Length: 205
Image (cartoon, rainbow, N blue to C red):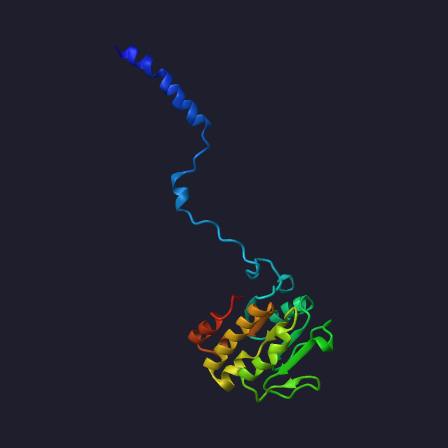
């Protein structure tokens, strides 16, 4: 009887085995618990071994560089200046950027005597500086905006105003296809205030 029963089920077992061999391979059960890979972002900051010159600023992006003096940010600025049709600089000491025609650059010199071809904004508030940045950023193609005067603005006009100014800069870059590059010394503020300021930016290095 056992033999007859076994023989009767052979055809059924063969069919099940055939279906299992022809079916697509199944992944392990835990695979469905894994998160899908995060899509790569156009700008993710430096990778090990990367240099400032190799970093590319894309339209709509913002980058904050933590450094005691504007050094690495200036390198990034010079490497990317030709990518945008115009350059806007908010600085106490505007850096030299070779290859940018005078007519394609606006310097807003903050907190000190202006150079002959610069707009002296020593007495202007962040809101007024924002007004002067609208034209270059909203022109076709946007602008590369470079700022290394947030410490001065925070001292002269207060942290709240400076944080709002930083948020405005980031939003303006996103909405106009411009790019924002900021050099900032984290020693100039309390660690909690530094954190508040950094959260305004898309990428911090």
